[in-house]
Length: 453
Image (cartoon, rainbow, N blue to C red; front, side, top):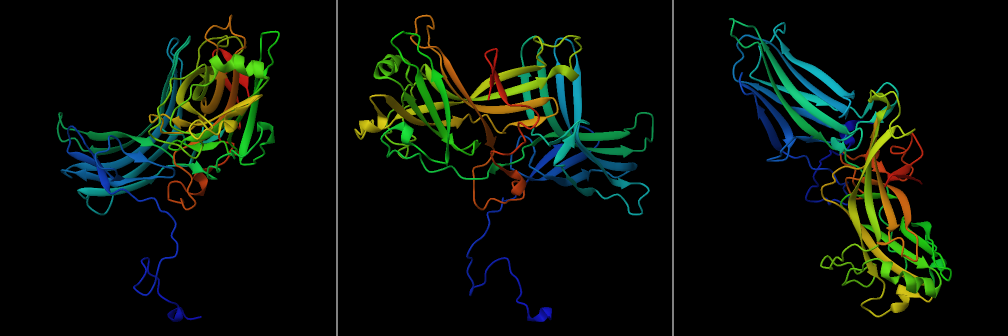
């Protein structure tokens, strides 16, 4: 068939055409990040950056591109550009250190052996890899990260990336300048998003929590054990979206039900979750709601950073008995509770004679910019944790309780059309994604105890 008979293609529709659908494309920023050498007249210009950015930033499979600009091309022998990344785990007390090379890409932009003269502006483009290997296993290239793990021994964990340009010159006298290097760190932040959207709210049209059946919501259960002879244990039922994959920027909805005898539920009232005002149903979320102070019963987002000390420490005996990990657990979000039917007086939705109900949401702290990951001896994991800790355990009619649910956090919210160059298919995460827990059974090390999941 002759190509002359085919219609010509235009990216933008003509006057007689209309756009029916278009995939969302990540808009490329147009700013420049500029770093000047202190001496030597060399400028490193990185394109595609946000205006006034503190550091350059790149995403998954990003291309570090820009120009090396030279004030003078006299006596130049060669011009090279290099990107490198490293994972550094260091024991503070004993001085043991483990360093893994995450990426290393060097490109020669000009050498005096070239037939063409050296230009005053030399363009370059170097691609970041998708994975790295520590010689034992292959991992996705991890994001920029920094953590300090206190304890005995203490550890620091740093994941750093940088790009540098080196200009080599022929020395013309004893005090001449041979090499000039201009270097800048950059942030690597691979974008990701959930594979499925958040489900519609768990129905409020039920007569009893045992009658709830919804495949879009997963049920997690534990017991709050009663100490008093007349008391009954309280059955905890926590519902969260079944995917277990959530965006850093979106609130995570949850529903909490407590089931027991009327006597035990009445005894539990002083330990019940602190409730936020101005909302009556899950669909009535208000940004102006008053946040109550955390109560005895809480739901939190916790992040755990673990370092495997076996390849770092100089000690002959394992740390903390047979445990080879040192960890730090920090709160990165706090749940806000609301009661069903508080405003519209549908009290039956908030409980019955043998049950009580709350709904709410978890929001991730704005300081958190990346999700969990595993890279060689460093592992970052996220959890939703329900816990009830009586202020005076000796006098409390109930024992403390904890329920731990592993989750995965993504940088971006779900979008049906989000197939930009950074996210793409590879950046979609689902609950079967092995990236976090493929190397060992998941557990949360918390308050000196290990909670198996």
